[in-house]
Length: 177
Image (cartoon, rainbow, N blue to C red; front, side):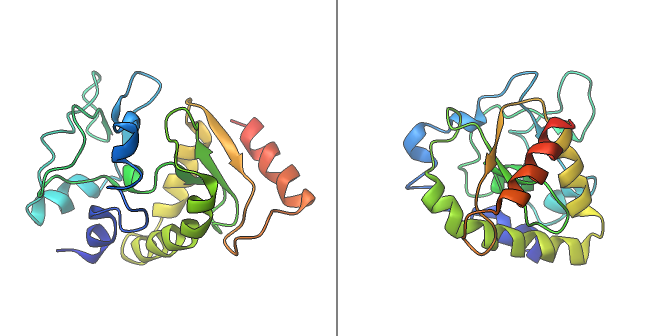
């Protein structure tokens, strides 16, 4: 299997049996403001390595990069999109120093667990960037246009609280949506 997909396929950064299943996969319940965005190369690569995307039909406009989720990707060969594997964390900057998280009502994973994992997520995104240049910028652009609820994640990759300057910058970037 491709290392790009292998890193994210089983959501290695967060124990999904413990955290994700506990809430009944509420993040998989989508509407017109909450959808999954695939990278342009993602569908082809998942199909090439034999992973199923049957649970990820295109949204109503038939754009193959915007998909809905008809059921959680819990099957052995179900593909878990990168957008889902990093959820609820999204980078706000291409240097991966500032992050936002999805609303807690959609993902109850405590910040203490996420604080330990953003470095792992960032490392995975850097691996993807190496294979598919421009992927981090694409994800940052998506983060900035996302219409769902996001909140500032007040910790950096080092696990320490952001400085007041970093918080001000992050809040300005979030308001610029």
